[in-house]
Image 1 (cartoon, helix red, strand yellow):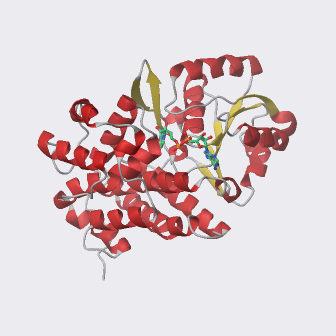
Image 2: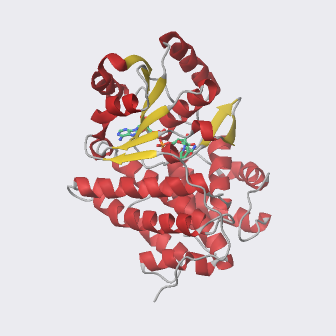
Length: 359
Ligand code: NAD
């Protein structure tokens, strides 16, 4: 029998957040706004998803008082300033965001500046909706803060909205979600509940993602992936992340690499580097994939679903490696295996070239 996840010492803080899973949950948006006691909603989207925002305007009726359709990756402060000017004009009393992590990032940045509550409708698997974390970029530098004021009060998960995700984003965003849960399993501040959620989240995504890129996925497959993404995002919001997330932040911020794809390439490599220090904590992940180690399972899974395998495909070059290494070594996050330069240089070189991960 597998051991339970009991730990002799732990602290668990749950956050007040209402989660609704339902097909067409987006049409409940007016009810949810009203149940917060609010009457004037401001809708946030990217330009690519402006039509999803327009649909929400209809669903909100008289409650919709304005919108901003210019959210972009890594939450640039100048975009937030422009959105804030429109928001102030609209005299809104709440925010409604529909989109991926970039849109939800802008909504959080506006919430931080105004104190307005948020109802969010995620359309990717990034998981930002479940966290009190906000990353913002200014002058080419990305900084991250944690503040309970940025955590959305209501999340509406609607399978009908993720069906439009292109396959390459399904794969990358799904691996991004898994990364939160896998690093959560060895976080110093993990607890039995975060570990339960992490394993269930990995299991749900491992089952759903191959079906989503196959022929005719069912709504229940999309729903299972969203369920996994919610669990993995909740883990990200509860416990500290380690080397893998540090690498992704350093490379994403430093070289403007795409967020989810960078996670997808690096995950097997970062876990191969770390696994020998925490084999027992990662054993359940290996068991989910039916392999001897978690990194071998992740490598095979990534190949099965056609995940991107090399950073060079996103424009990183060998001449970038020394600066990438410096960025990755600066202010390192705690990691179960200490982060040394030689090992990290090998890891980055393999990830650049698309070679298989190695311990
Ligand atoms: P994204 O939000 O940038 O979306 C990428 C593109 O896909 C956008 O054009 C978007 O409009 C479009 N898109 C999103 N959902 C779609 C759908 N269902 N159908 C068609 N198009 C769709 O990408 P992402 O990976 O979701 O988010 C990445 C951002 O989120 C990064 O800035 C990252 O730092 C942030 N993030 C933050 C946290 C946190 O806790 N703060 C967690 C994870 C990610």
